[in-house]
Image (cartoon, rainbow, N blue to C red; front, side, top):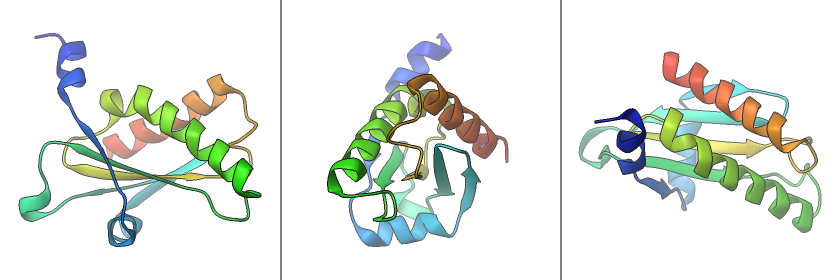
Length: 122
């Protein structure tokens, strides 16, 4: 079975409630110019075989329009990269930084990919 086929089978589920985000906060993190990624393995029965993904942007980023744009860009980049570089049974929180809404798309993808690779290597 090719690795491309295996990666497409991994389901990505959204983190939606605050306790999920707080749990991931106490895991590992990687910082890049365009974003911060926090990651933590799930424990026990809830581990499952899916990848959890949450997205956030603080008010320091800008007004609601800018924060929403930053989160949309993070969601799309994660949709492309997380099945390839994420670990099943782990949750990831993607945090926008000041540069996220305006940085070039290729740079955003590079930053996210390098951070995900670093988190997977630990």
